[in-house]
Length: 243
Ligand SMILES: Cc1cc2nc3c(=O)[nH]c(=O)nc-3n(C[C@H](O)[C@H](O)[C@H](O)COP(=O)(O)OP(=O)(O)OC[C@H]3O[C@@H](n4cnc5c(N)ncnc54)[C@H](O)[C@@H]3O)c2cc1C
Image (cartoon, rainbow, N blue to C red; front, side, top):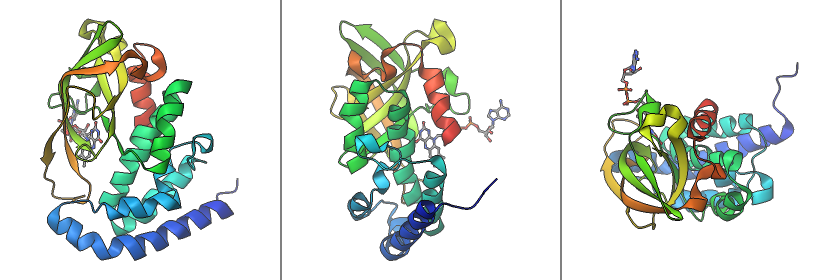
């Protein structure tokens, strides 16, 4: 078996290393001291395609294989693991899950915006009472007409303070156990969606981490990931396995 990197993978590694050393390294101290992500690093990553690493090429991204994604994370992380987390939460936890589990309409609507970096993404699973035991989440989604109404709080969410679109895990019926879990694509401008507190950390300080508060948040039914209720557990673990 050939374990060597392909020419494309070597080129990607080299490009990300040069970008990290030239653009990120001069800002690491400031980002760490002030606990912030410098937006310029988002803008500068756009033309290089890094933000579309989790998105298949037919939707404008540059997803080829997961090893390439890992190589990118490694090169970014050598210089600033927080910046690697910002790009990773956007590209892998959010966009890539839509690419794997979304309907054709969801992919057409949301993936090009992710690939270009026009919209930033995050993934909201963890709650104050549900961490390692992720299947015990309490965020509730109630069907009402052609919408779902979401209520709950997510915490420790990477990119929550800056994200435009969140993948939110919720249950349509706690009595169904894991069979009630669903994933929703929620835009920050949907009524009832709030970026909650930004949280302070001892490490990864350039990666903004925070809460998402959902108070009667109105989500159109077409934003149920994959279009079928009860698929949340499979979708959740398909993402966590890759992470
Ligand atoms: C930097 C950072 C970024 C994050 N980003 C995201 C994100 O983008 N989206 C998101 O949804 N979440 C995110 N999280 C949350 C993360 O997924 C949770 O922290 C994780 O699931 C653990 O949950 P917890 O912190 O509540 O710890 P707990 O579940 O309370 O665990 C605490 C300790 O107890 C141990 N433990 C737990 N259960 C058992 C058991 N049954 N037996 C033995 N030991 C056990 C654990 O191993 C751990 O050491 C992030 C967290 C951090 C720190």
